[in-house]
Image (cartoon, rainbow, N blue to C red; front, side):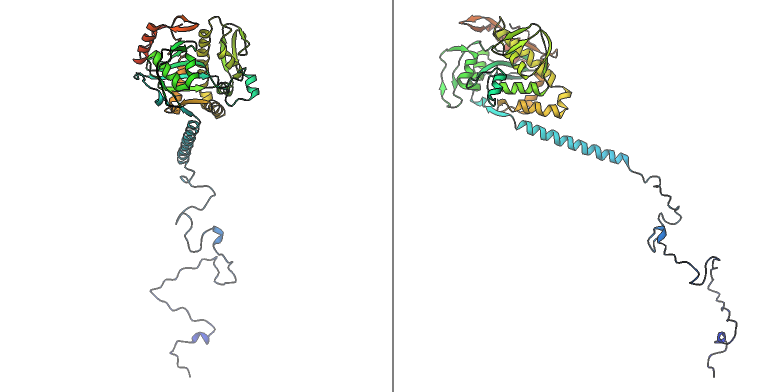
Length: 401
């Protein structure tokens, strides 16, 4: 007995299957001919061969072209952005190196001279005045160095050269002060003891002031005898001078006349030549080979220092770390300056020195009127006029010897 309604179960009785009952609200999709309805006939396709994640749309969204192996337009490297970032990194790196170099060099300066100890100072004028001193200090030199540079082995140190460099709006002026200049030692306070020494009218050679109580008394003596305010003090010894010259590869000089000097070791032919450190030191120290004695020597010192500054302050030295660092190291290690001297002020002094031979500067000896006991006597009238022109930062019209 069959309890099923009529029409059900016929599929089990006949050889023909019952046709699908038509449902008007469902539309059947046609089956593609290549698709098989049997599981054994169709190959298994996981979809991973296209590189897409299961269940995600193809790359690029619906309708996107198939990958070709090339990046679509607009998706290449952003070179403008990379250049901007690279430039920024370069600027930051250069800034860091510059700041680091400044503090490295600034830390090498020996700020040992205290101008606050100088008493009864004249009023400051326009522009900046540097007292530049070359001493015969042999500090840091071995016996072999002393022999090579013909410096001898004298204890202590004395001034071999003294110059005033005025840097102002009318160009730099370099004035040599012969060490044999006849000057009066004024009242002063001892740099170490602080004791007051009164003025007794004692007259000596200028370099004796340095030998008696060092840089502070030398500054006091120069200011007292000239009436010119000294803003900064710079001193360099034998070793530092020769080291700077060697660090830049020598200094080219045009020597007008051949000369020799056994004491300094000088032996020069006339004409253009490049002097190394040893030769340069001999050149600026020679005095006995000249009939004019100290005056001719100071002219050679001016000529050489101007050439040194001119050939050092060049892009090939400043922008070349292989020259810049050895040059700064050789010079700064032996420089003695006043406590208020900054590296910036030292740089300004150096470029002012270069300007002396650049057509905008003047170099001269202190005007001399005669001698007294073998010492050179300054021309008071010319010195007064010269100092007034420097104080007022006027163009120097006074001439020296």
